[in-house]
Image (cartoon, rainbow, N blue to C red; front, side, top):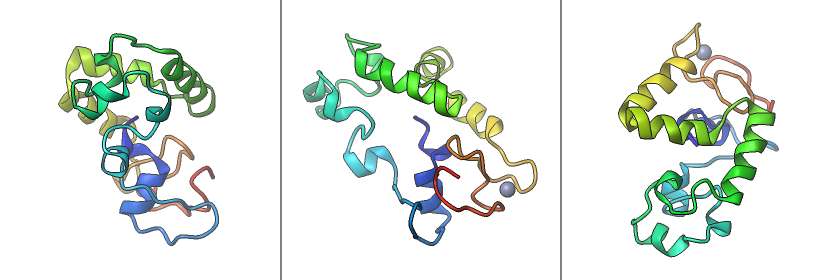
Length: 132
Ligand SMILES: [Zn+2]
C-alpha cells in the first residue's frame, strides 16, 4: 500500500478537518511500526518486527492468503493491486515505483495527489469522507 495515495494519510497531511468519516493515519509504518494492513494476520510477524522482512514480497509465504485476500478486496473496490505494486517494487525498485505512483495519481488541476480510495484530490476537491 502506497500511503501517499491513501485517504487516511492524505487527510492527515492535508489537515482535512476531522469529522465523521474523516480518519487520520500518519502512515502504516510510523503508526504500527511495520505494517498496519495485515500484520495481525501475518504468520511471520516475528521476522517482520525484527526487520528481516521489509515488504510482503520478501517473505517465504508471499503471496500468503491474507495478502491475497487484501489484494482481491483492493482490486475490486479501488482498482489497485497490492501484489502488482510489490511486483513493481521488485522489478524497478522503490524510488522508481514512487515516481510512477506520483505521476499516476497526480491531480491534473493542482498537482496534488488523488486518493486511491475516493478518487479525489485532497488539495482541491471537497472531501466528505475517506471513501467519498
Ligand atoms: Zn487537486
